[in-house]
Every structure is written in structure tokens, then in C-alpha cells.
Image (cartoon, rainbow, N blue to C red):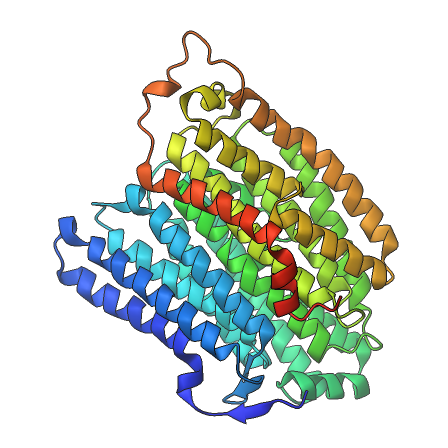
Length: 472
């Protein structure tokens, strides 16, 4: 790829800042009185801001590989920015939920460590680095899933952990097989080795690795934990687990296939297209029957991964594939967090309980509308532009049939999102007690901010796409 090799730790300032903040927060939280642990949130927020500044500066430098295993390029820099913005929003979103909790510090620390793993997944240019990042993006989130220890959170966390343990073993086996076939772990050397080695063994190894990445992304068929986590954990936790790991996993999916696996040796394009079709279709079909807002959002995230995998399926065939994927990921992160933030604000988990929301809080009802119509892909939201770009990339990449399926799924998804939007604009029932539930201030601020940002990103998407390297 013609990248320079760098061994300077200064190139990893965003990652190091997250790690230092997490360790410092953990140590400080152990000695800080419960009523003053808000300082841990401030420390974490400051770390994300420093990371964003460092990312902006690093993005102006030529592409390079750090320590021979970690690639710093447009994909990694963009993932850094998306994850750090998501973490900043999640820190604010969680403030009402975790304030004064006996495990308040642990929430912030686990979120930062999981975010670090997600960024590392995106930048991995070596199979060993990929597996190490997989573990870092997994273990903290297993603990975060069970953080609340209430209601159905324990059951959801156990299901998440068991599925993750299986995915981890599968990924390790896949990495081992690919190493055995290629005789190397560096992606470029793996590609060379696979092209000369037994294709059947390489295909088995690849499918095993992709199974692990599919689990992290919440893609079909490794998606079963997603709706349970979305419904069984507090909204800030659900928002984190359905947003942050997906970002790194999908970029890792793209980089691995585009760089390390020759399409001539293994037809991974067809495999990815089938996964995309299954994800968007099954996710939408399951969402139709839901009466729980959180469970609907969970299945919605499964369908969104299906659309995102369309860009992966045409990796290397069109220069639009990577910019479209990165823009869609940024749009998805903002929009998904906005949806969960509305639920966190109202404390209402059933769709029918949102009746009269517009009359109680017009701005929040509009934020909900922007979030849900954004997930459909309605202009001028950012998801609309991201989806349009992905559809265009798929057409250019010769997958017109996949675009037809995606368009039909997009149209179908509108109906279940409208089932949630419509009651919000109807008059409240006489016996409706939802109005007496005090809203969460921080969550409301996050809902309004992220909804506004998804509109802003949609309007300014042309500038963003140019920055990401999209031509024309």
C-alpha cells in the first residue's frame, strides 16, 4: 500500500489518552466519595476532546503503519472521530442514570476501554492485532451489559457474554487457520499467502473470523443478543452497546476483506451480500411486531448493519465504497444515540406510552421524529445521504439486485417507525399519567443535540464525503 512505517507512540495520542483516562478514572474513583464522582465524567469528557483534537491533527498527515500492525489512514481517523463523539454523547446521556450509583466510575471506565477496543479494531492491519482488539472491544462491554444488576440486565448480560465467548473462540480459530494457510499475520502478506495456499482452508478460516466480527457488529446470524441487550439494560448502556462496537467491527470487516482476502481466491463478496440481505430483512421483519420501543430499536440496529454491509460487499470495486461506509457509520451513531436518548428522557419503554409527547414536549417529539425518520433514511438526515451513497456504490460494484432488496426493506421499515411516531403527535388520553414522569435533563439535551447533528451532517455531507475521499 506504500505506507510509511512509524514506531513513535505520539502517533497514538487518541488511543493513549483514552487508556490513561480510563486507568486514572478507575484509580481516582476508588478514593473519591460517591457524591463527587462526577469528576470522573469530566475527566473522560476531557479525554475525548483531546482525542478529537489529536485526530484532527493526525488526519492531515500521510497514511502510515504504527509498530507494523496498526494502520493510520482515513478509515482509522474517521473511526476515531465517530467513536470519540459517540463516547462524549454517551457520557452526557448516562449522567442522570449513573449519578450517585455505587458503580458510577466503573460505567465510565468500561465505556472508555470498550471504545478503545472499537478504535483498535478499525485500525488493525494484522491478524494478531485484530484478535487483541476484538478482546478489548468485548470484555469491557460484557461487564457494562451487567452493570445495572437489575431487572433483565443480568439475563441479557449473560446471553451477551456466552455468545461473545463462542465468538471469541471462533475468531481465534479463524485467525489460526488463516495464519496456517498464509504463513503470516500481516494483512498484505496474508493476501499473498492465501492466493498461493489451499482456498478451502482459507475459506473456513475467513468464515470463522467473520463470525466474530459479525457478533461485534450485531449482524445476522450473530445478532441474537442485540434485542435482549437493547430492552434489558438501561438506555445509556443499550445505546453504548448497540453503537460503539459496531463502528470498529464494520471498518475492520471492510479492511480485512479489502486488504487481506483476495476475492479471486474466496468469493467473500457473495458471502457479505448474503449477510447484508439477511440482516436488513430479518431485522425489519422482527421489528414489525414489537411494542417495546427499546426492542424495536434493537432490531432496527440489526437492519442498519445489513445496509452497512452493502458497502463492504463492494470494497475495492468502487472508490465510493469506503467513504459511503464511513459517512453512514457517523450518521448511524448520531441517530441511534438520539433514539435511545429519547427513551432515557421519557422513561417510557412502550410505544403506546408516547401518545401526546408533542403536546408535552414539542422539541423532544421532533427529536424523536428526526431520529426515527433518519433511521429510515429520509432527507435531509445524514442517514439518507449515507444510504444513497451506499446504494450508488453497490450499483457501481455490480450488485444491483442487492440495491433492489435494500430499497424494498427501506420502504417496509417506514411502517414500523411510523407506529412510534404517530402516537407522539396525537392528543394524550385523559387517564394518561406519562406527563407526571419527570424527564431526564441530560438525556433530553443529548436527544436534541444528536438529532440536530444528524440534520447538520446531512446538510454538510458533501463536504464530509470530499474529506473522506469520495470522488465527484
